[in-house]
Image (cartoon, rainbow, N blue to C red; front, side, top):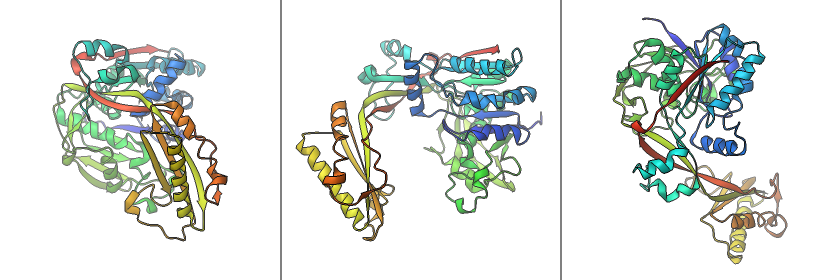
Length: 455
């Protein structure tokens, strides 16, 4: 088999550019549209939404977005893979089915769902049977925080996506499938790859890693060459042109802005990188040190030489849990002596909190415009600096303490240092802290469920 398939990235996170998927479908030929919505904190947000409304818990952006392209998806046999299902893939699929019927696609649109990643309801049973779900950083067992857990989702791999595609799904809606699995799945399906061909699994994984963040590999957030990136307002999202031998090229539609270069692709490869020899996914262990990049032409990079090793016997679990309360407030001080005023305001605020007997797990002060980005490496600012934003945040397990803090910042406008200006933002908002607990679970404990229906 020599056929090349084109897998287009349409979303790199929940909140990405809504025009991107439409441009990918309308801008030229593609076989697949991959849309990645999920991050660790996203799952907990969706779980809280589902608690309030059983029909919620997914990336609602996906429904009006697909409304613009579903007809073309069916007519051109473009397949869509997305983890927009969040913690409620079935509700997401139902909403998309209703949209399809409204577009006259009843009986024509096949929608697949991948579930089985949500183990929130199984935690007590797993713990009772000795699956401790220890924090990968601290080693603590999940039982220590069990009562505060909001969500628990296993990272599934590409093979449930393959199953849904084999059953003829035009749109595959998943829960917490890995970002890379949304691209590897189409490649494994189209080329008939075997699950234990580790270098091919690694190649598809790396293809998925390169395009999972959307335009971050095609000129967006591009540190090495951003001043020379043309037409960012018309940026083209990346496309994987994949081949059966595991080699592939990264390109974009002609006439779009942005830039695809060896440097832009290499920057994305470094994204969220730990040990480059051991990039562990449910499907394989990819060795990033074997990757070779070659500029094939304008806005086209060839990727080849990739090696992989056998997958592990565990899956990663992303657990989100309640971890207290926080509030962040800001005040802007203007020249002259802007930095000195902001520092004095911080001193006064802390002294008043101490006098009130308010103790916090942490009080964090940043001087935006001076050291919020680079910390102590920033050095001392010029005395002529025009403006400084004082940003103070606190966190505590006691909500009442954080609420009391929110009443102490605004008075500084009149009873603290002079020259507060700009948008103060009002009284800070108290927000619940959702913390992240990474753990491992044996693969034998997890059984993905794939369902494909005609809308």
